Image 1 (cartoon, rainbow, N blue to C red):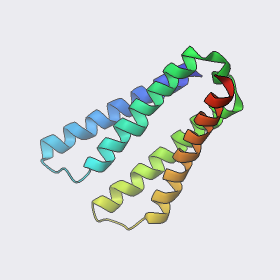
Image 2: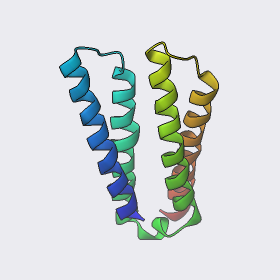
Image 3: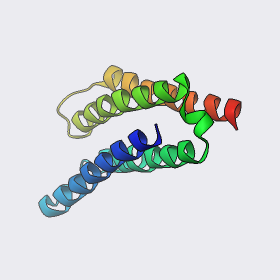
Image 4: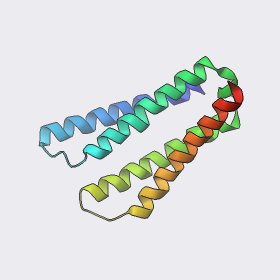
Length: 119
């Protein structure tokens, strides 16, 4: 499980860095909130979860860890797409943003419960 978290975190890192480079080259920083969320909630949070699951393998082998992985990685792209459309003025998608953010939060709750039970 830890490898899955770290590998997907690396994808978020590349995407977030690429988005930052695009914004810098175009001098259009309207997607800064998306850039920040992708790097924090995608790269940092998931990489740290992977490290934690590596350090505590009893937590990695649970249904809560699997739920955390899928909730986080299905919710974050929805959250970021909705946020990106909203901050660029293309659409007002509060329900989409809320759904994606809620999935990420539920994944983090799974992580917290898992760690409290297994550590």
